[in-house]
Image (tube, rainbow, N blue to C red; front, side, top):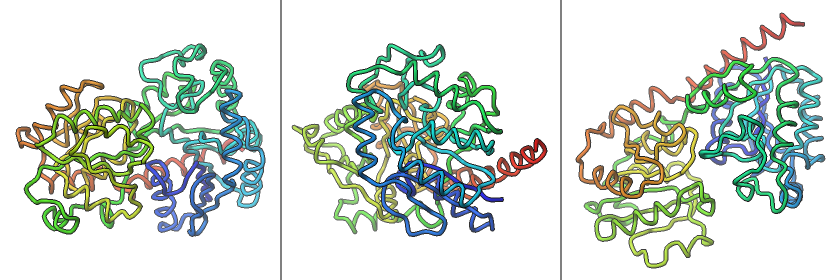
Length: 412
């Protein structure tokens, strides 16, 4: 059985790490596995191929912003991808995030549908079944065909035109024909949403994200980590990931306001800080902004030394950063949006109403003071290790691949 995964990135970011985990586990299990991706660094791993060039991404992004059409450009890169598929002849194509200005959807799906290649499609957000956006917050227009988009200037951004209704119709036409398909999402929340979309005709199921909790994200000695990086052992510490803080979806203002509230009580460390957001820190004295960390061991040490990890996203699916923090023994406080409540059950953390600053501040304080019946670090890490292993995730996907392959053979 020959598997090809397609995603925007490889091993960079949440969904991209899931792709890498599945690929590596398949190879370890003796399955012929390949990955094709469009953006990011060139990976030096077996069976991994980047088919786009950076200038093609920039050109596609510019055209998308000017025209309002996302996914209708970048023919050169998509032509290389199709040529690659012809070379390796995959038995199953496993799609992940297809947005990100790196694909021409009509070209890709014309090939997949004509070849009737069975598809497993993992939704890491809502983009596949709406007109354009990645997350629709409270908007339900996608159930009727989109149009008059209230977030036309959000990602993927349109500068002038609203083609969301037209794109919704074209997506439905392209995405729901061809060979057999199975839709997978990491959260029960998104699975239920997918079942209400035009993908409801297919099997829609949940496979929770897995993370490497054995060699990367596991508890380190908090005292030793603090000494290593020059932090006081007794000082309460709040940790957050600041990647993407220019996007209102990430809820940066709530984290910054939390920091103001905790001034004199705790340090707030934000990893993945971009200088473009420095204006957010005006008047805030207890935030330590740090650049992105590609070394998983360093990131795990920061997770381990923190007293609480805070996720302020206003829309999320099943965030791997939450899993990483908990795998290092650190509880999470987050807004009750998307799949986050599924992650923080049974003493793993605390969910508060989305956008409720007061409740967020109270929950973080309660965790810092030890006032809540949360799992201790050892048991918390054990839960994640048991329930979110890459091996278990890859095995679940392998079962789907085998079932799809059998059904495809029977239909020939």
